[in-house]
Amino acid sequence: MSDGTTVRPTGRRRVLRALGTGGVAALAGCAGLRDGDAGDGGGTAGTPEDGTADGTVGAGDVTGAYVEALPADANSLNVLYQDDANSEKFVSAALDAAYTFSDVGEVVPLWIESIAETDATVWEFRLRDNLRWSDPYGALTAEDWVYTIRNLYQGEENWAGVVQYPNWPAAVTVEKTGKRTFQVTLPGPRPGFRASRAMWGARCLPRGLIEPYVEDRDLEGLRTDEELNELSYTGNLGPYDVERWDRGSQFVATRADDYYLREVAGEAPFDETFADAPYFEEYRLRIVPEESTRLGALSSGDLTAYDDVPPDKVAQYRGMDHLKFRFPPSPFCESLYYNQRANGWELLRDRRVRQALSTAIDKSAVAEDIYRGFATAANTFQPEWSPWLPADRIVEHGVGESHSYEAARSLLGEAIETTGYRYDGDRLVAPDGEGVTLRCVYRAGSEQRRLVAEFVAQELSEVGIEVEAESGGPLDSLQQRYLLNGDGESQPAFNGGPRDAATSRDPWDLLYGVPLNAYPINPATSAGYWTERGGFNFFGYVPEAPLREWYATARSTTDEAARKEAIAKIFVALSEEQPANFMTFDRFRTAYLQEYVGMPAEGEYGYLDGWDEVTWRLDGE
Image 1 (tube, rainbow, N blue to C red):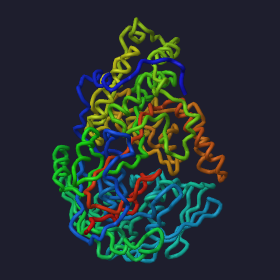
Image 2 (image 1 turned 45 degrees about the vertical axis):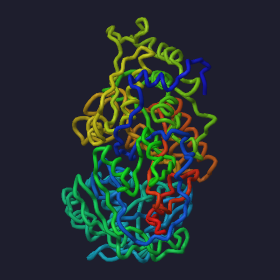
Image 3 (image 1 turned 90 degrees about the horizontal axis):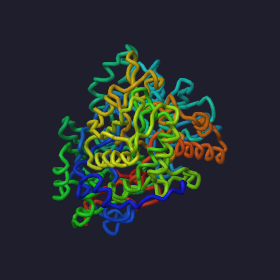
Image 4 (image 1 turned 60 degrees about the horizontal axis):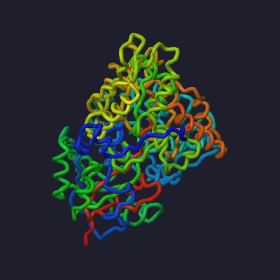
């Protein structure tokens, strides 16, 4: 939605000049809440002219090793405490999960063979009959699921500190209905439950392994148990068996002798290629912090695949005969967060101030010039390709004509009338007469993120605000210093309590580099970010619109039209209230060896098209 204000054109040269550099260099691609950074391939994102996969599978046999180089190691292989995308890459080599999706509404049954529901309130899950843990734990049964959920995921006051606890409120009951069936009863209808974080991608553990720790409330035992931390209990439940994990160096897994999905090859959606899956003898993840070394290995053909080639390197690597690229869309939104807690700038609690800052920042320039066209400007917390996005109702800030320094100054002027803040010439000053200086923290490891932070500083200087951009370190450091909040008494959490009482360890005003999943399959899942006591509302946003009520409707109504309208209202309100400046949605930039085949062609919801990755292999011809 335009405010009608004319702005001067923004071109690539102006952006680069403002940042004091003659070119946009991407010197590192750090793993994150999602791995990698948005970028540019020298053309239109999603429409590569060469090197695309054709979806065919060659005549390759099981051979060699799949090799990938990562900038960071896994944080943990213990599924109770593993909650980041990087660690999931390690864990999923050895453990599948309940089920996943191949498209919106298209369930891929993995451990769970079928799902039945009654009135969207009672959900019954049936397990396959060929699932087994490693000795001595026997078959994976409904008892394992029920015991894990009741005693750990729903453990009293989360005594075990597991990451799954927010997904399993006490009002949800779980009971065994047969050896291979269990039933989840919700306090009311939830038509999107199958796509919630409770069961989508969920895992359980062998009762025999965890029971001694549960009986003794032994938190330390759960955290340090060798089997849990080395994935030595996984039986036939994943495509590979963990061979070794050399911390900081490499992770090696070997092809499982008895992978359960081989038995269902030919049964939809599993085609005949699953009969021999996976197609590599080994699965290796090398930990290589230096990007130049990782890219050198890609250049020399030593890697099977490489996630998120840096933006300014894509054109160069697309020119190499031994490589091909794919650019599936990402569901992760990269945002500039506004700290509305007590250790952020007080005026960030005023929506007009947040709107003003978002209006002053040209996010189209960020997408096109810094991320070079592989990103698209975002206006709310849903990508443009999402079926849930009410595009014609979204309020734009910082896009096209809605990018305006004049309009931003006007909004700021209106917001500060009774605050003691004022303009002294072109400079915004505080009641004490000192100029306003904001602290913008960005996550280390990505040149693009540093450039965005510096561009934000340049843009806000146009409305009289000085911004100091500084690195907040890698993700683990960023979390400890700026994301986790506490009141000084209780354990710090991403939402540690009321925003006046709970603050992060270090103060900040703006933060960039924590991309969050918008869950286009089930947007009601995003309540944890945008409700006052949401589990990942680390920035202290208190909505003016009744978001909690709308999220409740979106979760509970069985009227599809009413559900869609509730979700639409949420995204419209977020675009209006700007709890964060929704900057960009990007595309993954993944390079593969030319002979690595099996991946499907690009599709509208292509971010889910890796569900059958265990059948991708080297072409034997």
